[in-house]
Image (tube, rainbow, N blue to C red; front, top):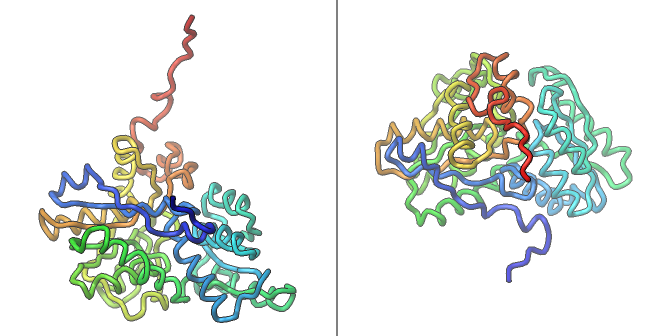
Amino acid sequence: MTIRSSLSDAVGNTPLIRLNAVSEATGCEILGKAEFLNPGQSVKDRAALFIIRDAIESGRLQPGGTIVEGTAGNTGIGLALVGASMGFRTVIVIPETQSQEKKDMLRVAGAELVQVPAVPYKNPNNYVRYSERLAERLAQSEPNGAIWANQFDNVANRQAHIDGTGPEIWEQTGGRVDGFVSAVGTGGTLAGVGMALQPKGVKIALADPEGSAIHSFYTTGEFRAEGSSITEGIGQGRETENLKGFAPDHSYKIPDSEALPIVFDLLEHEGLCLGGSSGINIAGAVRLAREMGPGHTIVTILCDFGTRYQSKLYNPEFLRGKNLPVPSWLDGDARILPTVFID
């Protein structure tokens, strides 16, 4: 019998799932790390756990203290749930443009939610910078103190993947992994797994959504952003501390029009309900597979459940408004059967 002593012990050790359609199309084994099976249903649970543990071990986070963070949602959910299991309160600052589903989940998880306009990082009211000031203020007023999680520049984030995700992938594949692909939000997943697996000869690739400048940085040395994406929680316009000291072997710019059909096909034919960032990752894995050629094994991250984006990603009206593809099975009343009374 295997029993976890607490919620935090259930973070990590997620399975690899073969992605059949893209594997067969490329002649490679494309495997997804099922991070949606973490307790908070996303890869960000790993960073949340390591950030909290590091703050406790350093003495910055005291019993009954408050954790403050600026997040697009998933890290906040992880911090709220893991924090609650350890007796901490959580205050989350989130851009108001993020999905309602994530905002609702943060409230359900017990976090106090502060919504701010979505503005660039250089603006002092950017959600990350606002959360830093809020943490400083709460540290003076909260009886048990407060800390700023600072997921973008706190390298405990990438350490979660150096110690956990990377070695798990190596062990699960028996060391027979040729490539790894991930998008960048904070950079913790890409850099952390990269630092664990690059020295073993694994090729590491960035999959970057349009509207982000990190692909440009790695390919031209300059931060230039073009286009836009409906994906949430990924995309970056600066070199975070989690990215410093790391460089990918390959970099791909992935438009939503390439990623979303993969997400829709996976749900219809393989039963995987995923968010848009997973689509970006898988599209990047397909590109890496075609570049490396048949016979290789490539792993990517299945970041979170698609239900966190149902009002956008799985909303035909929203997709049409963005001139994005709408799957036939999601369109209109095609899947609503008439009421039939059976005697």
